Amino acid sequence: MTDETLKAIECIRKGNPIECSAESYRSEIRDAIIRFASDCADSKDTIRMRLALAEVNRLDRQYVYRPIAESPDKTHLATT
Image: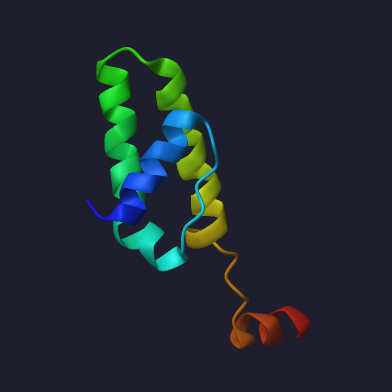
C-alpha cells in the first residue's frame, strides 16, 4: 500500500473525509477502502464499515460517475 492509501484508511479510522487525487482514488484507494470495509464487516465493526462505504459513495460521485454530455446526434434528433 502506498502512503496515500494508508493515509486514506487512517482518515476513515478517525472519521474524517478522505482527500486524494482522482487518479489515486481510481487506481488504488477505492479498492483499499472496499477491502477495509469488508474487514470491518468481518470483525463486526459496522460503524467503520458504513463510514468506509459512505466515503466510497462520496468519492465515486466526485471522481468516477460524472454526467455524460449528450451527443450531438441526440440533440439534433430532439429538435427535429
